[in-house]
Image 1 (cartoon, rainbow, N blue to C red):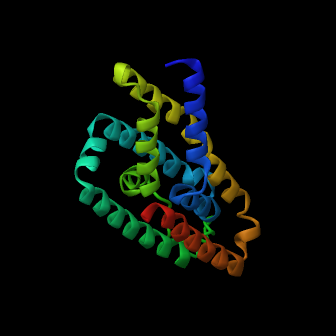
Image 2 (cartoon, rainbow, N blue to C red):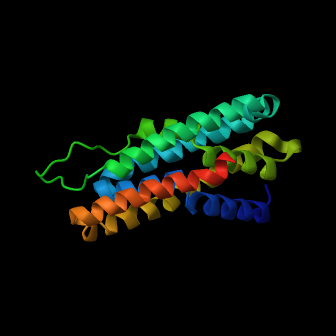
Length: 199
């Protein structure tokens, strides 16, 4: 892949990874409620899950989705339902404490975040768009691997911005009423971020 094309691909990966969507909203809320360190597995899971989804789309699943649109619709419905459930969990969460003032809530695990990518409509759109725009039929496997490399380079720094920003707001949001309204707002934004992808 030419350097110019790879640079454009890196920019595409950065913009699609850092712009608001289900992952970024969840990471921001997790950063506030659990802090950066406890959100770290969630960030790693996003990278691993998206990497596997990207390779899956590039090496076969994309063709299945084109051939069977009902499968893509089912994926949107399942993903949308799961996101609504997560939005409910965030909106009703009153986490924060945890230095003996314990709270039962737990951040998302590596496995949970990785599996979530497979029902995340924005992740599917990103993967399909990247494969369609940046693969070269004459050198398909190599260009597919370059796409995976680009997203791997960009993904973690992009998602850590949101978790870090959330973590930085922990002090201000330690007041229960602020935290309550923050979590409700994040739940609403998570649902709103889903709307363009479900149309």
